[in-house]
Image (cartoon, rainbow, N blue to C red; front, side, top):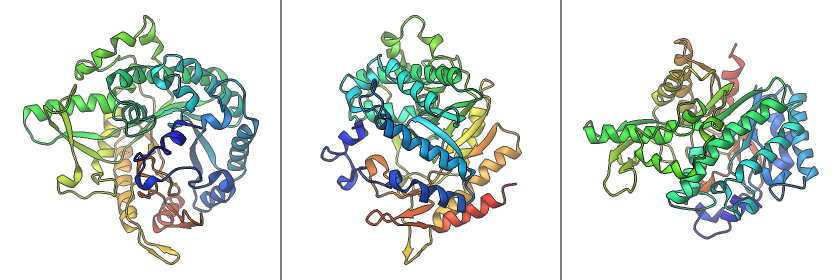
Length: 414
């Protein structure tokens, strides 16, 4: 099992006690889903490799049927003219490795290298687009500091080593892919949000700079040779005990592209009550702004501002939006799912992406989150992000209005 298999069996971890045992059942329905993508003019498909599916013990003996499954998915994509984009790590650490400390254990670098090498040698002949990690700030912050995601750990003593080891794995994974996969495009992905001060006073402005350093700079700057943003976020000085002599050199990797994943803007205020950072995010629902089901503000300029922010780093070769989308309450009328709010959201955010492109900013692609409704971590099946609706009782797929709109948008992309 993975840490999420374990986490979902614990009480009060996931909304409504949901688990991901079956979820979308892509394992049995991958052909149906890939054909559906093709019918919707989708020609690039981003998916991740489940570490435990191919290495049940995290390291060591290989599960050949697991490798075969991904070979089948990759081959079927290519047969249908769809380019596979593979994310190595999307949060499902093998539980056996978590039992040894998971991301807090420096041995994760060796474990992750073994997993990366197996993926590269098994699939690299056909997969040429790779992402090393998915949103390291989320899996370290939510999983090892706030405890709201698997493995449910808390406190700085877990968060800080997890951060540093993820930064090292990010670079090491890149180096291994570079060595083992000829002609690969190698990237990694980051969650990012525009961070604005709640009030226009100096304290809130300073707080916004600190939160921006933690949420938008912490994982990318070491890879670019800029080190950790300790000046703006002094709490990061506490990383020092985990940093060994050549580590900051080992954090460096020249990625071919950076994936950024943007949904919203956050407003932050100074708060004495929050330890270490003295910062609090002011929920969108308390700010009288339009929101999604996740209580995220609908704020299209955020994606433009993030593209602009990352375009300002001369070391970044290419930016791709690897996730953007929204959860709304979809109205279902028989076979018709009229998710006009999602269509509106995607149009407005894509307009900002196109604006950035027209201005010559460094933006080269866009993926919607997500193709089908799915298991959304601690929120379970409540927030639906899909262009395609899934009835989780029958597993029937139905293209939503947003899916039809996006298919039409893609048909005109040239």
